Amino acid sequence: MKKTIKIPKKKFKIYNPKLKEECGVFGVSNNKDSAALTALGLHALQHRGQEGCGIVTFDGKKYYSEKRFGLVGDNFNKEKVLNSLPGDYAIGHNRYSTTGENTLRNIQPFFADTNAGGIGVAHNGNLTNSITLRNRLVQDGAIFHTTSDTETIVQLIAKSKRNKTIDKVIDAIFQIQGGYALVMLTQNTLIGVRDPHGIRPLVIGKIKDSYVFASETCALDIIGAKYIRDVENGEVVYIENNELKSIKPFPARKVRPCVFEYIYFARPDSLLNGKSAYEHRKQFGIELAKENKIKADIVVPVPDSGNAAALGFAQHLGINFELGLIRNHYVGRTFIEPSQKIRSLGVKLKLNANQSTIKDKIIILIDDSLVRGTTSHKIVKMLYDAGAKEVHVKIACPEIRFPDFYGVDTPTKKELLAANKTNDEICEYIGAKSLDFLSLEGVYRAMGFNKRDNNYPQLTDHYFTGEYPVKPIDELGDDKITQLSLLSTASNN
Ligand code: AMP
Image (cartoon, rainbow, N blue to C red):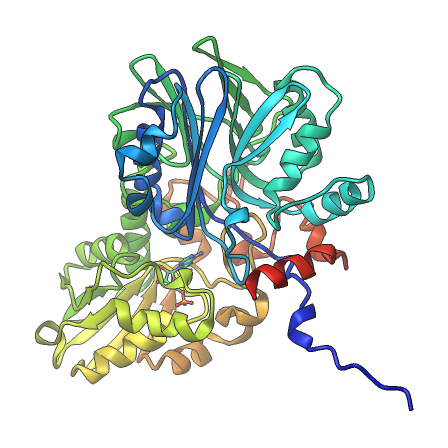
């Protein structure tokens, strides 16, 4: 009789191609303290990713690299580590990733040797055609070592037939699509690139004779660097012989930054379009208040994500702002936990009701966004358990109905509460007395934009509208990175 061999299903799990990364990037030129400045910059960008961090330096002869799991402050805090990264040029990366691919080989910056010399690459964002490109490269004989879409960029650069590295980079970015901010390091050249729509952010700063590239201005502030300007959408900037040079290889297009940087992602003190994220969020709160005039005893923010919007809301309606929830600062962001079970536990680990301020009160609870509803569901219950009389939830952005493919980890449509439930159903699920979202018009009004403007929409706002400025090609095809399924399973076992 023929024996059937049972293959344990788990071992052959196909690698999930929907790998998304948020991440923070940083780079500095011409500075003898380049590694230490990069560590500080990454520390300021820690909110963009906490899974792993890495720094690559160049000392005129050789490249050096350190990559670690965990936080920057826990890994790049010793002289010994920083001394192992000599050189006047450095780039760094903070990594955030989703399920399963928590391996050292996926931590950036990536490094490759090309026929024009070595290149280190740090990437924030998500390519929408990386699987398509990757399959083509593999068919062509390329060998991939990681499961990150960033390696596709490195392979494209290495494969380019152009002589100068900067031209190789341009060759590569003509092939990739999606949202990306790149900081790269070649022999004594620091390169920064922002995608043609400017979906992901990248700024330029200067400290003495050193240029700095960073995801956000808070990374300039920490090292005392002066903000010069944003890298423009579709712009390639590079520092050569200590001079800032710029190439715009793509046809001119209007910039459409990601609305979620304004709503949630950027640190409140970072500048976005000339104003701090904090000011923008306060204004979202004011617009939310204009749309929802309501009587209540207190306004309570979900800390820290709802703080600024709640302040704006409370100030506009003249209602007392109270810290009705206290946050434990020693727990990471709720989303960072890769499984739903741990994620919901995370909310409890992170927050506790401040009973004395909320007992018998009619409360307006404000958060910046509602994604899966995990946070609101737990917190509303927590407030009622602590004696709140009524809890009205107000969200300082519209209903998120569509997933993201450009580097912000908003999940599949199936998991997005507002994609599957009506407002009343969501309200019932989270157990609130009422629930309201800021309108999309409100978001634009808050930012001083107008729907009637010729260049509307000024933001990448597919989360609410389903209008994607870059087609998610990989999502539309059936391609899978099958050759990596075994590799990634093996390393995770
Ligand atoms: P949820 O609990 O699933 O409804 O998610 C909403 C909460 O997660 C809010 O408190 C947000 O501040 C936060 N949040 C929203 N989007 C993200 C994101 N892309 N990454 C991490 N946290 C997020």
